[in-house]
Amino acid sequence: MHRLVCLGDSLTQGFKSGAIFEPDLSFPAIIAWELGLSGAEFRYADFSGEGGLPVNIEYLLRRVDQQFGQQLSPWETPLAGIHLHRWMDRTEDYWERGVGSLPLLRPGPHQNLAVWGFELQDAYQLNAGLCQEIIGTARDGWLNQLPEQAMYRTARRVLNPAHSRRPVDLEATQLYRAAELARGDGIENLIVFLGGNNVLSSVTGLRLEESTDADLDRTDPRTRTATVYRPEHFEELLKRLMEKLEALADDGGRVDRVFWGTVPPVTIPPVTNGVGGRMESAGSLESPYGPDDDPRWFRRYFKAYTRPWVSASEFRESEDAHLTGEQIIRIDQVIARYREILKRSVQEHNEARRRAGRSEDWLVVDTHWALELSLIH
Image (tube, rainbow, N blue to C red; front, side, top):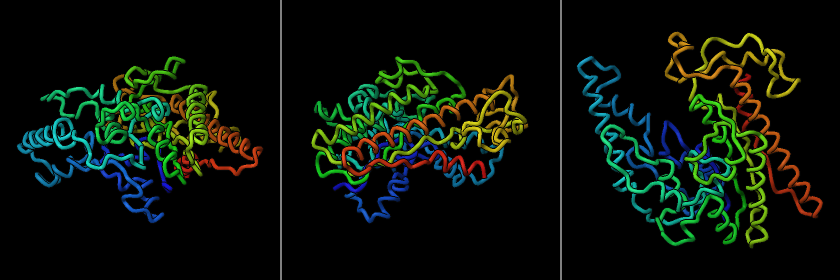
C-alpha cells in the first residue's frame, strides 16, 4: 500500500520564501521520513532549479549578500539592481522555456499532490488540461521577470509530470491522482489539508469580498473574485469533496484513514503587519471562540493590518492599503466556523461508519487551534 498520500496547498507542498523550492522539507516529507519511507515510496515533484517557482526571496537576498555584502553603498545599488534583473530573467527563462518547462523523467503519480494556491474545490475541479491551456505560450517580458502562470505550471508538474496529452492525463486533478493510487495498491494514510486559500486572499490582497453561489462551480480560478468564502459555501465545497472520497470505496479504491487539517487563522502567515497598537475594546463583536474565551480576547488583535514592509511608524491610514482589526476578527469568525463545520462533518461520517458496524477512519488534526494557541500564549 501507499503508506502516505497528501492533498493540500502551500503548507502541505512546502512553499516558503515566496517559492516552492525544497518539497523534501515539507511536513509530509518529514512524516514520510519518520515512517521510514524511501524516495520511491513517497514521491513529489522537483522544483529545485534556480531557487524554485515562482521566485525565492531568500535565495534572491543571499545572492545579493554574496555579491555585494550585507550593506550596499550608493554606487553599488544600481549594480545590485542589474544583477537581480539578470538573475530573475534567468529564472523566468528556466521555468518558461528551459529545463523547468520540460516533462519530468519520472512520470508519477506523486504521493504528495499538494499545489500552492489551491482552493478547496480545486482538489476535484482544476485539472491538468486546464492548467496546460492557461499556461499557453509564455512571453519573454523585459519588465515583468516573474514566470507567467506560476501556480498552473506548478500544478501541471504535480498532476501531469510527463506532460501527457492523453485525455485521462489532461483530466487529472488532485483527487483523480489520489483515486488512481487508492484503486491500485491502496492508501493507508491520506492527508487532506485544504481550505486556507478560500480565505487567505483577504489578507494577501487586503480586500474583503464574500463568495456567491456562482463561485462554487467556477472551475477556472481566474474567474473567482471572492476573497472570503461564506461558511455555507465552504460547507458545500467540503461536502462535495467528502462525498467523492467516500465514493472511492464503491469504485474499487481503498483508503484506510483520512486526516483532515483545519484552516489556520489568517494572522499566522507573515503577509501582513499589525499596526496602530492593540485593540482597546471589542465593541459589538464577539470572540471567534465563543463566550468562554478570555474577557480581553480582543487584545490579540491590532487596530489595523497592512503590508509587511510598512512599519508602524510609517503607516498612514488614508494612504496605505489595510484591513481594520474588526475586519480581521470577522474573518477569524468565519475560519472558526470552518473548523466547526469540518469537525461536525468528520463526526457525522464516523457515526455513519459505526452504525454500519465499521471502525472510524476519519480524524481531525486541529492545526487551527494549535496555531491559535501559539498566538494566545
